Image (cartoon, rainbow, N blue to C red; front, side):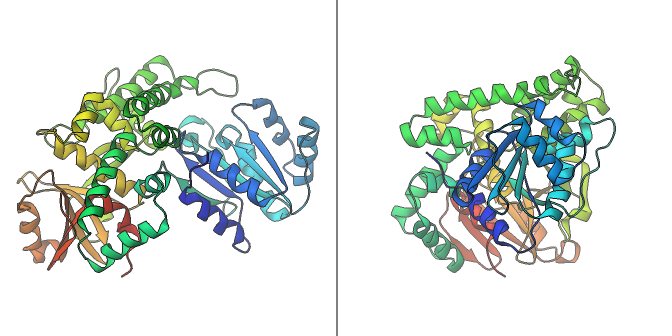
Length: 449
């Protein structure tokens, strides 16, 4: 069973765009890249050539000599007699392309040739710079880059049978700032909690929508965690030797484990020095591995909430989040999942919902920061939204947003700011303060000015 994804529309738009380049789809392992690409390819092309450089390393030799398209096609035809290359009716899929730098270089020549569509993909494209002692030149202007993440809440709704009309109703309430009817509101709150526990890995979502069994989903997520933590061990160079030594692997795995514990500290800042088996420099490399492999993402502190936020980013001060909320919940344990579904969480409820909100903002591709000063001012997240610096607070229960009020009343220093409070609320707007339920966070990236 294929689960509908947002990339389906993106790939179709890419293909129909005149003078497009080969596509390069980048994203974390198991987010559904290959399945979505193959689904698209099988719908629109008579011949689909699928090449996986990790599973079939020998095929890299077809890109070792001339990168002339005719030469590549000839060598590929000899390599696999089942490959059929028909001009303007064939798409070539180059999976795990980071394992064959010359294949990525060939994208430029495929673009110039124009007879074949090409989609490249990879889970470790961001690691090329870290892993190659000699920098690998990359083609300029010869690839249309598409970033893919695990499923967001909207895609989770699709998987659960909620169609575009249902989403349109939610969008309409959101755009008009109207109260969501109670029956819909309660159902969406329940579904969002389920999404928090199941997350967005397609394999896990498919298992859950088929069985509605949290225990089964939890087991699948833990299998994914085992694979993610084992990935550095599998990374090999051209000679078949491990790219990472045992100490580096332990640091990467320890950094991965520290993400969840850091989330429950007072300031939630990720402290690099806490990573075991290394010093500050090599510990930083462990974090960079997780970020470049799309396993985790950073949310930086800013010195000031005035726009543009990026100029106030404090590079060394950041929080680290898993790139899918299911990892966070699984690391917290199955009893935490049960407590969330039973509404019996205690003092840590705020941090759990904050992680879920970070997940939603990340999957909406909204640049996100936070704000914390030694004076005690603290804002969960800060984004640029509809032309304003917008403070975002994740509430476990109703609160008075004291820090936000201080900032909003101090326009001379912070500029004009607005506030969005997420919590156990329905939609409401009062002056510069908007309250929203968590399940609507995915809509923040599509509101028109």
